[in-house]
Amino acid sequence: MSDTLAYTIPEACKAGAASRSAIYRAVKRGDLTLRKRGARSLILADELRRWLQSLPVASNHDT
Image (tube, rainbow, N blue to C red; front, side, top):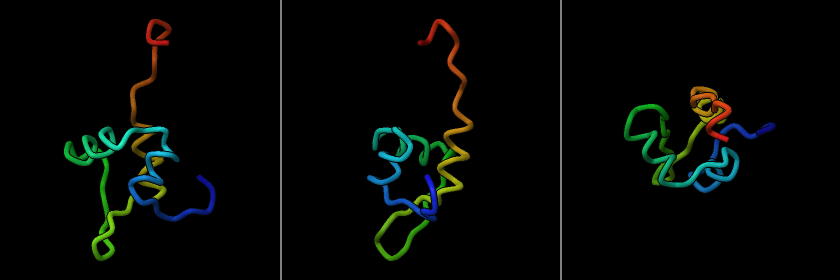
């Protein structure tokens, strides 16, 4: 995530190594905020970064 300001859903999935379902679940729970530009849904780069950093840290047993 370099100079990109906002991502479409497919771009956010790729940049955040997350599935489309995971993105939409996070949105539904209120953990991730979508912005709208016309019909297009966008996720701000800072918002995607904040969401990823809020994910739980894996323990040694999770890897």
